[in-house]
Length: 239
Image: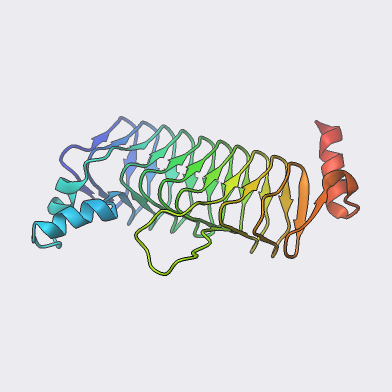
């Protein structure tokens, strides 16, 4: 049986599976499907700290429900598959799909028609545009434009020991591909239409329409003679 918090709003034609937990000021719009064992509106670290300060036991879901004071919205026709976790304050626009074991942190925005798969981890204060495909790791405060395919890792530089601070994060433009295992590190910007090859490492900003391979090896698409250029040219002709 699911646990539904006392002020949760679930609209008509939404479906919630067994053992799902929905907390706080959460709105589930029509056509949403939430499969078994999902948690929606999970408290943020700050909210959990408030509960600990009250020195109350943490075992009761009702106590968790009481501390979630930020609004979580799952808009129309989203599909959240089993064992996924979405923290409080996050908004999923229409038609977002979260495959099994997806993790989304607090105060994050996922644009409509985006899909998260391969155990994607999208952390807190992240913005993801429309029509994206995410299968990697997005660190706190990272930002992705529209129609991004991101199957690598967006990471902080972590130049200081310890946590408890918000570091500058990567910013990814529109129509960018981040290949499997690619690492984008620190306060860098990746321009529109760029392609980061699988396994590449990016530690400095990338201009628009650039191919990156290995460690920061950059080449404009017009000068690239690999298979990628032929594929890109083919799609341009089709459009």
